Structure formats: C-alpha cells, structure tokens
Length: 321
Image 1 (tube, one colour):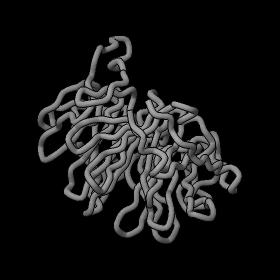
Image 2 (cartoon, rainbow, N blue to C red; image 1 turned 45 degrees about the vertical axis):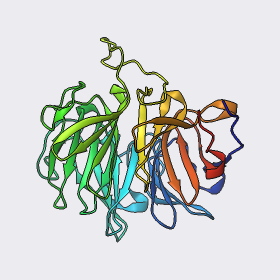
Image 3 (cartoon, rainbow, N blue to C red; image 1 turned 180 degrees about the vertical axis):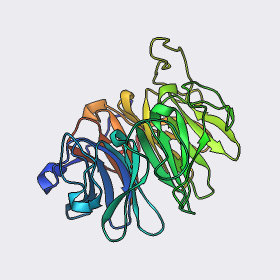
Image 4 (tube, rainbow, N blue to C red; image 1 turned 135 degrees about the horizontal axis):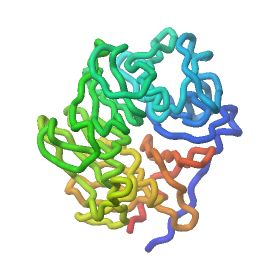
C-alpha cells in the first residue's frame, strides 16, 4: 500500500463561519455551498472567505421561513441549485425541502414539517428525514427520502411523487414500483437524466434508468435481522463492498466518487464497474467522510465529526490500493 502525500485541512471556524458538522457540498461556480448540519446554516466558501447564505445559527434548530439571514432550519444535510440559481435544501429534521429564492427569501417548497409519507401538492407532501437532493437539467428535484426508503421526485410546480421504492426497507432490483431501498442517503442525476442512489443500509450504489433499478456497485452480504442493515465490508474490485456509503458525486468522465463513511475512505467507481480506493485513513487520512466534491483539480471532503473541510490536491490522491 502506498503512503499518501500530505493534504490541506481548512478550519472553517477560523474563517468566520463557525462550522461544526458539515454534510453536503455543491459546486456553484464561484464557490462551494456547504450544508452546515449542526449549526443549521447554508455556507458558501470561496477562495478567499466563508459567508453565511441562509440560516441563523441555532444548534437546537428551528423552523422559520422569511429573510434568509433570519430563517431557521433543523439538520441541513444537502443543498442543490437549479438553472435559475435558486437554492434547494434538504432540511432533514424538519422533514421538508426548503428553497432560497433570488430575493434571498426562504420558503418551504415541499413538505409539511411533520414526518410521514404522502405525495401531492407542496403542503400535502410528507417526508421522513430526507437526506439527499439533486436537480436535473429540467429543474425537477430528486430526494433521497431516507426513513421512507424511497426516491421522490418534485416537479417544477412543486408536486411530489414517488419515483422508486416501495416505502418499506428492503433490497430488490427491478421495476420502479417493486424495487426496494434501505435508508437511501444521497441521490445524483447525470446530464442524460440517469439517477444514482447511495443506498446506505444496503451497502451499495444503485442506478435508476428508465423504468428499472439496478445495483452498479456494492455487494450486500449478511443481513442483521435486528436492524435490517446488511453488514458492511471493505473490498475493492468488481465485487466491491462498502460500509454505509453516505454520498456520491458524479464526475464529468462518467466515474463516481463515493464517501464511504464507516470505512473512512473515498472510493471511486470506474466506468467499467470496478471500485478502487482513492484515499483512506492511512497516515491520518479522514474520519467518517459524509460528502466529497471534485472541483478544479482538488477534492473537497466533509467529515462527520470535524469542524473543517479537508482539501486534497489531485496529485496527492492518485495513489490507490
């Protein structure tokens, strides 16, 4: 195994933002949006500083729409931006999808605060801890509705529907109505509308293409009947194993980065389906990564219990095992 070169760790606390637990990362051209899960804010990091986009710091969380600077959230886990520059937020503990419009106003776009499972209009929809969010080229929103074990879709009018999943935890490929997931935590969509899912409880990465759900990487092993999860593992190759993969990022070349949380590793799924390890806990490494983003030759990594953002130059992460 090759030793990894040193990396850069940027403490966002020293840059005026007070980040405590970071989650989802999103590229917005001139910077990166960060879901500040613990302090319930959306942050923006540029090359020179960190600013608060929305949310009033509140470790205990809250639920208030209105001016972005006075809005309250509870457990922001992911962010995404549509073609109009509007920001959508997976406000997981508030069981809803919030929106920051172009006038810096926060509104509840979908969900009704109370946990549940219902499709329909913006106010009628119910979620149960939605953790991941992605937006396609037509501005449809996809949500990893984690504790409902489904992938939801919100059209541009705010009407929600279930795209895939039965609403019960399980592991099955097949058509959209019969396929099952177990606590999906992230979702990504490519330029062709193909959707990818970090199916964390099943320890694998799934693909939704057309009317079919398949598994593209990860091999479920032994199921723990007490909690319904499959046992995680750490195996590379074409029969790879993950240990609660929390999030995924699609690269322009068709490869997929995986934040393999409990393996303390960043993995890559190559276009031929082979899984390799990009970076792990060797020589310090990383501690429970929950998101990874590639931008301009650098990898940005959120770690569950760290008040910082790890930044690794591309040339420092190319040793694999």
